[in-house]
Image 1 (tube, rainbow, N blue to C red):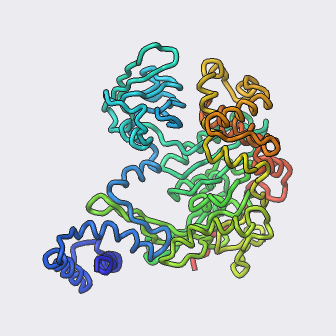
Image 2 (image 1 turned 90 degrees about the vertical axis):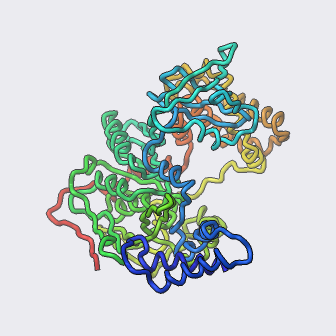
Image 3 (image 1 turned 135 degrees about the vertical axis):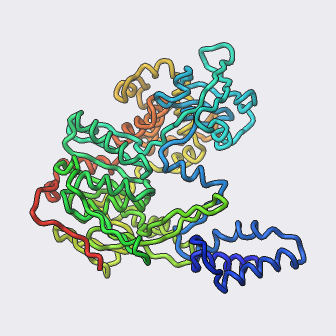
Length: 540
């Protein structure tokens, strides 16, 4: 009965245009209200109809498509913060590999930096309440550090160079939620930018990063969108506009209402129309990432490298409800410039099979062999230059690079699953922070680390001591390079910040190495050129 009531209720909301208000109730809505009234007054047990609906709505919306979702009021603020560009906080990045929060990074110019907090500080108390040694969940601590801008929080901090606990009164401020994980010169002529999401501030962050790289001498660019699950559509459109000549199609959307029908092209104002570009994607690249990648590929503007993207071609609109909860409702499908919708197949009401599709790719060998990729050959489209591309299941890159499994052994999986790589790197960085902290860049830091064999031996001993993982040198030697390179990247991240993680890991990343090679030699896909002809989008 509760499920029937909830289905009828939500069906009435969606089909009857309940959000518009100011009209006569439909027969379905009258029936819903009558049933709910009977349940509230006549049902054998005392029940709360609101609680019934609250737990039933997510299951009901799953009957529509995998991306129409319900967001409870308790989660809405945190959900929006991820994309909105900032939140109220103190400006620290911490981890809880032990039972105590240790600051690993201080946001430059943030409130914590202004009062003198440093990387390596242990947060012991928050407003005189103990938060160390009690196995407090990191999210609960994070919520206590966050708060409205202008409010204050008192922190008790232990520091290795101070004999007694230090006290800091920190006034919360606006802390940026950044979209750029790394932006640096990967070769003397190649700029590298890794974008982790498409939020409110992503375009401006991206543009600033690109301008800085250009001033550093970049003549070509690698845009890494691996693992970027998307976000807002507009930043992806603005980013694509930077690389396309005027009149080039970027994306179109089609839905049931006139408001959902859009055809968007470039305006010719882009600052990087003549530089070469390569876009890196994988099975974690979705939604807005695919809009950007599709615009670059379909206009033959640059090459795509990596593995087939996720395949999300549905557009959601977030509608906030009266109780401050919200629904992200699918209102349209988007189409790349060639006219393809890259939404992969799904069965309404079967979210499990949809969620398992990425795992199925792995099982069927697609992650390791391009010949195992399942493309819908019935959905053939052509790029501006006449190359064939396919719809109905993600974007296939121009250059396929398989998933790298070299060095993965049972020993590696044991230490990885036990968290030993992160634990060792953090402890090593923390123990040697005063010395390693003098490094101003990645190259200097790497020179300060022990020799590879020494670092590996230290790690093996640590894993045996802390997790009881016995040394199995046959497998350790097979995994040697993988373990050492990951340790270096993690140590660099703990000392120099997140960007350093990618600077080090990219040195041995097969996908990035291949991308650098391809963009440096590739002449098939040329930069944008001026043309009297203007390409338009077919809205039929």
